[in-house]
Image (tube, rainbow, N blue to C red; front, top):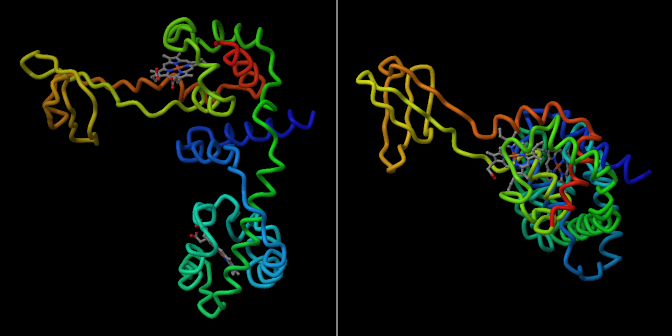
Length: 266
Ligand code: HEC
Ligand code: HEC
């Protein structure tokens, strides 16, 4: 039950964002799920000192556990923190801060204290990773219902085949990556078909478009740019339009069921 509730919240968040969901957000979701390499044991005294410093200097804004507040971001999701080693990224950052964005400069914090704060943050990261549920906790759906959705309401089978392009996908991708792959597949170029005044049709992929101008590369790699009103007709098709639309329609159950089905495609 706990597993269901947790993943339910994750998906609700994903869906709550609707179209605003970005590949970056999804990538970070996936990155976070990766199991950490065996981490070196933390120096517990440094962690304790760092916790005290963090509590007095940073916790007010970032929260005592560094998981963020309304005022400041969750540092356990910060690339700067995850890429830091013993303060090498944190120290230069704290010297400057980002005062214009509400992050003060801590230029006077001694290097030893920065190093302790780093030890505390890395320990927090390790702890949250250890407590994270394994990805198999996502597998609470009903594969039969997922198959029905795939062939029915989801219309997946109109574009895909589990014996063709999706063959073996359940063996290739771990559950979280698999979920990401059908919720938000990697961006695809927009397909363009432009009819010139002569009636000649040029097809290719979109490079740029605004109200007045369109630029594209045709199949032979030639670059074209035209005023839009010069063209007799113009069509632009996003190969992922169906996916983007579906993102707004899924229920939490649909996603779990689909995943349960797709993992069986081995
Ligand atoms: C007055 C509130 C405040 C305090 C105190 C504060 N921060 Fe911040 N911090 C912020 C805000 C707001 C941001 C986001 C700035 C932005 O939008 O780029 C931030 C950003 C950061 C980031 C960058 C996150 C990222 O990935 O972009 C790090 C790291 C950080 N703070 C660490 C600390 C540490 C360590 C301390 C204590 C020594 C501290 N902060 C104290 C408000 C604060
Ligand atoms: C209108 C056509 C269309 C429909 C409907 C559609 N897709 Fe897709 N899907 C695509 C295209 C185009 C891509 C991107 C190209 C590719 O990776 O095959 C894609 C990509 C994917 C991928 C990523 C494949 C990979 O190898 O990275 C998965 C998984 C997927 N779709 C699953 C689904 C599921 C599940 C549904 C039903 C809920 C669905 N698709 C509905 C067209 C469609």
